[in-house]
Image (tube, rainbow, N blue to C red):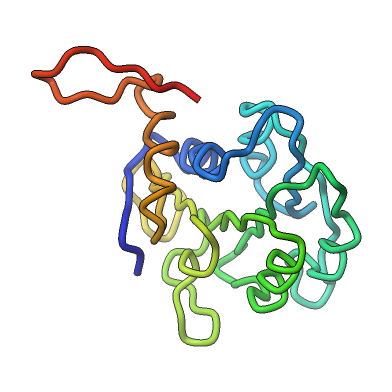
Length: 179
């Protein structure tokens, strides 16, 4: 359901590309859930960003949008909701918080391939999203991942993270744009 997709070596790498795509810098805060696989936070640490954890809603076991808003500080730059167990987060509420505070939304869809929120596929609500193709996922590629977005402007910084910042056709001269 997205216009653009870049394959990666893992879902973690795709999440990391989302941070780069959204311009997250060292010391920036990204809010995510307390209940997820470690990659939701470690991708932030790899990017020198600071994971901030918002508690879950006990009924859904997913990130609580009210607690996202309570965790926002002047250093907050993005929200990373995690659609866990194939269950989508409350994207209407999350996007409302993001719009109110001018934050990026990077959807972690690594365990939610094909999940629908109000009839629309997860990974199409935020600025970008990540999927995992790990052997234990419901859409398995053995290993790998995928970064997706509808915003062409996010492709350049996302691609700059792949192949150590080298962006060239084989016949071109070397051209590095590492973020």
